[in-house]
Length: 227
Ligand SMILES: Nc1ncnc2c1ncn2[C@@H]1O[C@H](COP(=O)(O)OP(=O)(O)OP(=O)(O)O)[C@@H](O)[C@H]1O
Image (cartoon, rainbow, N blue to C red; front, side, top):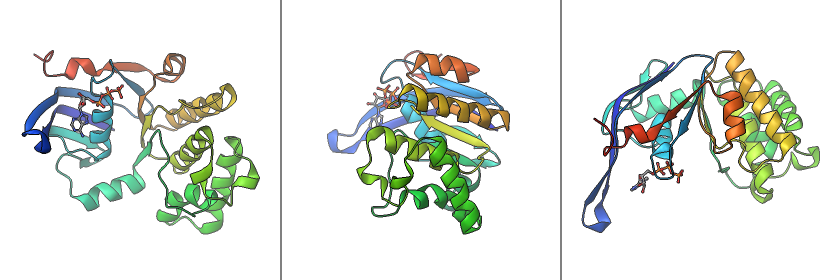
């Protein structure tokens, strides 16, 4: 489902004399349907950079990143947008939403974008928000003023609303209490059980051990260490 082949990445700091920072070289791995892979490695090793390339936010300098039938390294922006709508979900650490849009709509939006009828999309959104213990009195308010943990749970509800075949998770349990953390781990396990290919960054080692089948240490892809 996710196939990364010989990916490299460098940053050019144009406003600092054009310094070139080589961050990644020879990154190769695959993630099968139903599998969860954790990206590990010390701070600065390149976990977030790799995640951003998997989501198409950063373009790799070379190699290929196949998700479904799209190669993100070669894809046109419209192909990446379609991939994100139908195939590739992403739960980032921080919620980014249009101000004043109510929480219920924020969570239902990805389903509406896929053509799911309004009532059905809202029912799914309600069910996820309730499961993630977001109080019903907050559903008609914008999540911009919510607490860190509430915002993270809205983000998770939004990311799990559609059964994406591929799912990227950036620290999905970071600001959560034990009860909500357990709900999120259950959601990840359910996504795997229906065949989603999942890639995540989990600093929470216990969560990582529970839901991940494999760990990939991205330090092995840093240019200094690569063969
Ligand atoms: N937009 C950018 N411009 C320049 N350098 C960048 C950029 N993004 C990342 N880097 C560099 O790439 C390297 C890897 O950073 P990255 O954020 O991917 O590491 P990480 O493993 O996710 O770290 P952490 O665990 O601290 O979040 C770092 O040296 C960083 O400075």
